[in-house]
Image (cartoon, rainbow, N blue to C red; front, side, top):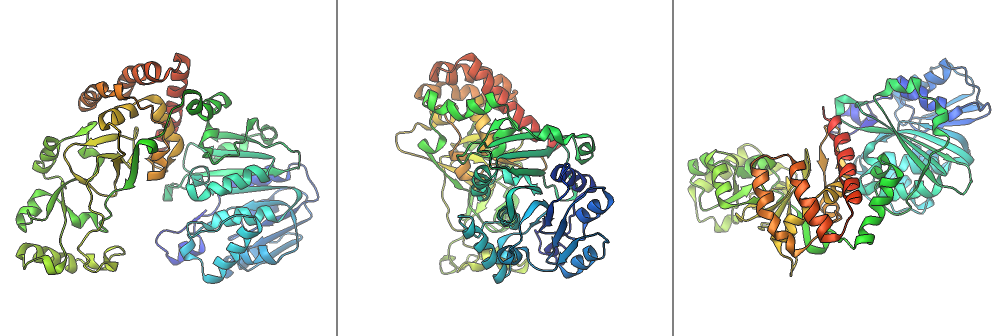
Length: 535
């Protein structure tokens, strides 16, 4: 996988190449006894897959390798292998122009954001999406268009085998890709790894192995190995018969880490017990985007040094500053007195500063630090005026460790984009709303709707948080103080759930003990898998 974050020359061409055990296994799975395959590698880099094919004893008809970078293409061209063609061009262009079709398409496509495509690449990628009946957007990553384009180049029966970011299973911009794959292929196998394959970039990857055979069935299976070396002992025969039914709806493929009974439970529980989602009772928005949190969020010492009391507003910016289900004024004062960054600087426009010496001095300090040249600050009329200053009713932690927390904002504090803002809808009781969240079913859905990162972090975007099931009942309000106290006392979440699952799920919504146990099992399975990756 070729990751682009800082747009260095090395990363723009792709700097993270496929480990040999992975390339060898994908070839072994793909060829699997065939002797007459036309093979395509749409982004061959310096030729890892070609080398593996050279070192094997597989019989094949031809291999075509496409590589955008001329230096890497020359390296691949030097590998001595029969019936090999290396083409130095952009895959998107090749895909739209070639008439050749292939039995097997393999590789490790580039992981490049839309903004790093040149205009021609964007146009050619859009053509691929149009051919597949899909919508192309600026959120689309290169690996998505490589998967779609490769699928279009398959013969009537054929396979693709790719190394892809685990975002495939989770992120919203890959949602239509998941739907496309589910309909296009008859067999899908996903192989994930407990240990990071690319530890230097903290990027979790999976192997996507798809087969098109026109059987009419659509099945999927997930298999998790310890690391890439375990592939050497994996019999490809176990991948011949995936057993789980593909969900043609837009559910995330995180589901397929689970057993079929668990999948069926998650798909049916909301309808069976008429359980709504967070979005029915609240609007979830990103926190305040300052453009430079380290500058606009300050401790009390900075407020005093520059005499900024007129502009300093109470805020909470880190999850460690909140250890409860209710964040009150006393909690905020404790953070402030501990010199935490508990103050948000909300400056008026330049014409309304009224020659405030402290404010002007701090703004001058920001300009000396070039804060005014930032991506967000640089487009403002007054770079130091932060937009969307609103106090929310509650907070939802954006990035989480053990589990996501929902917190009432009793202190009336602001929050940066490290937390989401919760705005309660009319006729919703905030105490009941918050208490209703702390149960195993809601926590299970937080794992399913969110996305995990390489370090074991669970992140949820606002739309994802709104899709979490929330068994809301007015009567749940009575649980709030107990939940809050237990969190403040650092009680294990399991101790809280023993109480809340009975009151919220069993008594409130009629779930059986078996269903409650299943929800708890799903939450623990998914969260433990995620947390173990961070160790």
